[in-house]
Length: 478
Image (cartoon, rainbow, N blue to C red; front, side, top):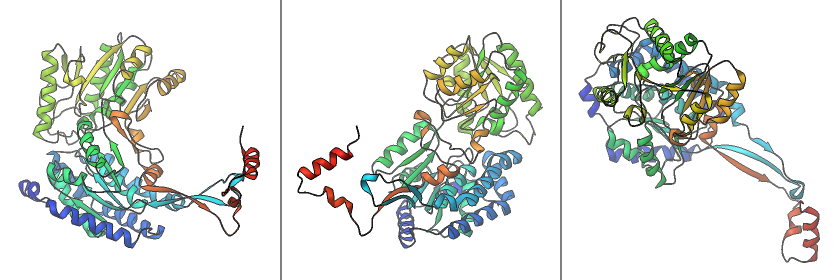
């Protein structure tokens, strides 16, 4: 699908139409507040078939937005997990929808209790630019599985993908069920102010604060999937080839433009030099060259490239040592050369902000206590990665650090597990979704107490007297 980028960037939903779209979805929800499992399954099947049939068009649109995005990375990191997520939800949906039976205390008998999982209504999803398909489809699957109507706000930084998604989803869903909103930052602000029944935002921590503030005006519940500085720890004795190769995969995928990419690595101080060499070999093994390499993804736009180059300039001016991993400097177009940074300090912006690019600072440490202290003194990250095969040390990592998720001896792949929740903590977010947790996030777990004709509770109705005192004495738990 071809289109002029300037035209795409000007194609946005007029502000006064946002409320009309929302009202249309709210009315449709009121007319069908509890869609049956068969209808939800039909929605998911239509979505799965669409993604399968249009995968090349989606690959091309995403690559157009990036100036170059590896087709295989789009398949591996966007299309494949999206299809797996749809399949998993389809397989488990009927079980998720079943009411959950709960116990009733003897003092309240005869009665029964259950929890009913009810759709919330209209869900808003704000999608970032780094994985514009996967981070739209994942929340959409959870919200549709739970029986909701969904409005998706696509990023202004991915106009070709946004326009294609609007056209494709419009083929299979009426706008009162799923609609795509396009536009610049002012549209995003207006979108976050709608009176959604739930709002999910994925993006920068700084923007997440504004989204949460806007949602608070309507008391709209929010799920914030943010980022932060996700650390990797290389243990004192792990084979460096193992750690370097797996960290390199997590850091180079999508040129580091991943919210759970390793942001910096804690390495034993006497292993730093050896790790840098092992890491160089791993990265060069993945990408022998940058120019004309179809596997190496570009930085999304000039603004983000300038931001990353600014991190390098700031760090080197303050004493950091930049070690490029490629002989040539800048790759073709916006393919930024992957580099390691040594001698970093807290006053450098590269150690304050989430990097979101192919720069890897290395922080030396003496022992695990020092490594844990370094992590725990900072805002809680979205992910944490530990490389070492000692199970006692692995348990220490799990018990003595806080993060949204953990991989032991791997990176990134915990996000693709459909049977685990995904979400941050503190500065890296709140709430979670994926799989069953996604269904629960977009449902109201409504407690229901059921009684029939006989009413034993009359024993505790006023007027009170000696009889109620005796009853309380019998039922009182000591």
